[in-house]
Length: 381
Image (cartoon, rainbow, N blue to C red; front, side, top):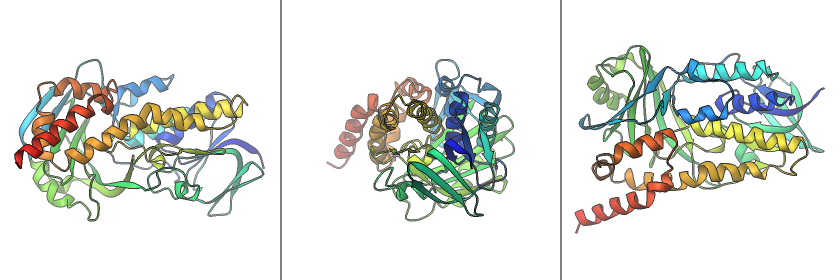
């Protein structure tokens, strides 16, 4: 049995990103994917164009739409239209196309792929990780990357990630026409979804539709009812939607994302934005940062992988700590939040900066929270 440098569990965006960067540095890496091929993965598909900085190849060939305008609404009325400044600050992609593209890049760089590899056991013996599939196949590696998404059981097994998991309840779907959604325009709808929002992102001749609730997921989203209210305004019908509900791990406090030769990335690491549900940027960021730390570690330049957790805290977690606070206030008082946040004269510029990755939640959080709390307390006095 050949000893791998790194075994990556999961062939999604974060896993394939890590695989590419490792293979590109001549590391012996293998992706263990439980599916035969990349399945259709319906999600929002929005990501900052800043993710291009983490790749030496161009991502534009797989971008379906470049968003130049964001339209906000409160129960389909009281609309606010924001032009995004800069060049290509926000991209929309089909998730399955992104995953497949990154997988091809990784394999072209020398990464191996094992399909139908449904991992049932991960253990470490004498500094070597042994990963076993349901069908009995087994591989050995110096390090393991956990990249199998929000339903991953492994963070708890190895006492990694947030001590208390926090989930958003989401619905994602796709419609094979655009209706009256304008090209290069993303729509965010507040007020229809309790403790959350709905969205519509264009994809050439299709639309990604979705919604999420972030404060209370005891009950599933009544997505059928919400779609009946939301879609007619877009010239679309609920019967056209093909989609599914799922629980999505979201950021819930600073936590350890690595152990001795093991790393969590993407949704398995609970990195999803707790306010806007942005998951692709942290997935790609974590894949890049994980590979960087693993390369240094495999080359003997560092003794542990702690630099990865520190990098994700600095580059993502510190902002998400404020994003979580904004989420908790905004979604409790959404109408106030819409009036005092979305509709403020400075909102278009701030929105553009957040979507492009140029501004973090930390930059705006203190004044936003104070404004919301002050207005809410005043309304009851």
